[in-house]
Image (cartoon, rainbow, N blue to C red; front, side, top):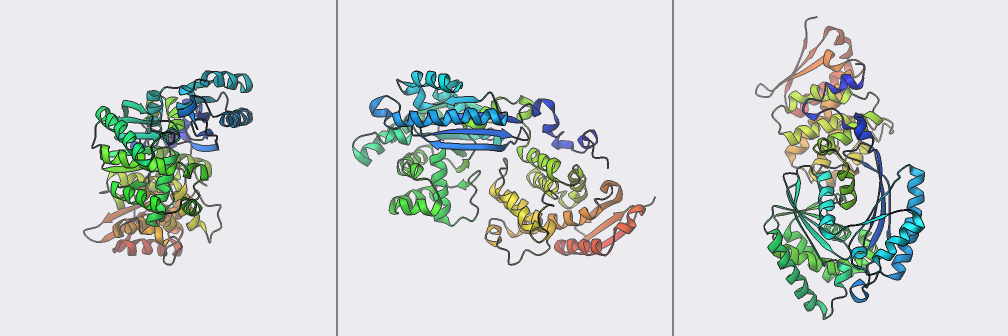
Amino acid sequence: MDGSADQRSDDWGPFGRPLFEDPSARALSRVGVVDVGSNSVRLVVFDGAARSPAYFYNEKLMCGLGAGLGETGRLNPEGRRRALSALRRFALLAEGMGAVPLTVVATAAMREAEDGPEFCAEIERETGLKPWVIDGEEEARLSAQGVLLGWPGADGLVCDIGGSSMELAELHEGRVGKRVTSALGPLKLRDVKGGAKALDSYVSGIMADLAATMGTGHDRLYLVGGSWRAIARLDMERRGYPLLVLHEYRMTRKSILQTIRWIAENDTDELRARTGVSSTRMALVPVAAQVLRQLLYTLKPKEIFVSSYGIREGLLYEQMPERLRARDPLIEACRFAEASSARLPGFGAQLFRFVQPLFSTSGDQRKRLVKAACLLHDTAWRAHPDYRHEVCFDNATRANLGGLDHEGRVFLGLALLHRYKNNRAGSRLDPLFALLSEKQIGDAEVLGKAMRFGAMFSSKALDQMAELHYHPKQKRLELWLAPAARDLFGEVAEARFASLAKSLGVETGVKIKRA
């Protein structure tokens, strides 16, 4: 196996040529974005595979630019000072990282404040950065595009909550449709007079108008924004949920409403200490929770998902050619990891073909997880041998990977655990296995052991050395070896083959192919 890019590109079939090898994709390899929001100012520098970027740098400052805006009509003076200081720093950082020019987007507070244009001019004069002040519908569009970065085929309604506004955008067949903005940001809502009942009436009136525009009963609702993520983290805490990854965390209306009641019944300082939510963010949670309750009652979504991708990722998506947007972010990220971290880049595609007979009847979603596992199977080789299985599991379950729900994360992690270790009993990871069915756990074990066995032939071109032939009705697994591979099938390889067969519950056979 020569490992050349041209040779490997022939191996991908429906997965396509690796995106980051395309020069037009490499041009997106380091992109800097600044989001000047009503509550926070954040710099993100994306690096790596363009379709599924890594966060090379990420820094946020809670400035509260929009605090008091509803009463004064002006930006918070202390927020202005802190935001300008942060932007000076961000401009210098981006220059040092080679992430210039920065794209700077300003949202609700800057577009609504009477001194917003004055502050924009000050930012440009003091930092050289030119803010792009966008309207609410454009903010909704970019947030929805951020969701598409992680879910290429996303379908449903995106709800992005900021400090001073809340936007809704419709997604259908991977396209952004209708969009609407509202004044339902928690910073602005804190200025509503008359107590909880007045606030509830105000929110429900606006929500009814939003429902009239966007419709109700969407199958999926994608939540974007720090306040929604804080509530999701609290939902995890109440449920005792074992995987603390917010992206693609799934909730139900019933669960969220229970969590909103639970928040109201508990001390917010205690909840903050238990969950690590910042004091600034936690101060907005009770108001945001009222908005979310009305949102669920009015729009009646069937499933609710949290997206860590929003306006910043939407800006990156904006720069991608159409042909790149449709690529699978999970496969692209795993392919990039293999190319940069594996001992034999390119072997993952061969390993996928080797194990494929065991999953020939699986659906597309399972096959993409099998492909992802094969790409990642050797990326933790530098870890200490006693801990490789845990490192692999942690990488899969906690890495910033798009296009991967929580069940998929644990399945991928468990398969990679079994790539390095036969037995998972007594592992500190046991609570996470509860997210999978017994069938999923069994399939992950089979995949891991198949990769563990296939890796025994990695010193040669696996395609030419060995093939698996699986006959589930006859409960038989056969290994077909090329004559030149006879000596590769030593005692350790035999033991791994037997372990794989045991997990499948089948008998084994070995055949030598004709030369």
